[in-house]
Length: 283
Image (cartoon, rainbow, N blue to C red; front, side):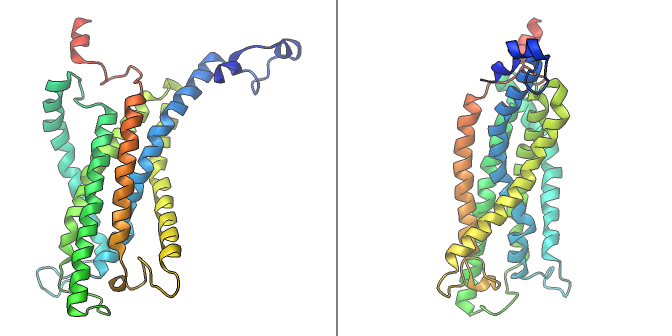
């Protein structure tokens, strides 16, 4: 269909070439290459919605937990636990480069060990467990609320450091997904549009934040009817954000399944890191 844009017609011959009507073959191929990247781009939106929970519901969840350090009088801000996401990234980047890449290289014969799509898929898979960890923690927190009637108590005897696993898992998933996505868009983009496609890959973060806000709005409008507080009330002790975390986990599972289908369909453009080592040696 897009090839027709590069076909010169009689109108072009009579009235002259109009760049809005007639494109070069290179322009058409570049557009087709970008369109092929869009399904991969879309698969990162759900992950970005999971990632955005660190600055939203994770923080609200932490505010309802014991924020003291070792039972002292020193309290840490719940939002500061995102440092464990950063520490996780710092931990996993060298692990990936020094251990995972050399190990997988022996089995795949590729310079980078894993393809970018395989790397992204691993990150999407790990993000599922981040939401599962958050949901289980909230279930345990609500059990304590119910058992001790802490419904109107802001902090309870459950340390905020139980949130560390979910932050750590998101950091691990981030190393695989975001970095893999950035490399994928750079290598698979047309040579003249690599900067544009690299920037395009980063828009998934914004799209994921919008999706998260949309989901919160929809869930609130559905669950907070007939005088009910809903899943995400102002007082989380009377709500069920664990249900929302399970919802995100379910969406992540579905997204992972769709991503596998897209990855099988996609054909790589020959690029650095995707050519098997044995082929390079033969050259």
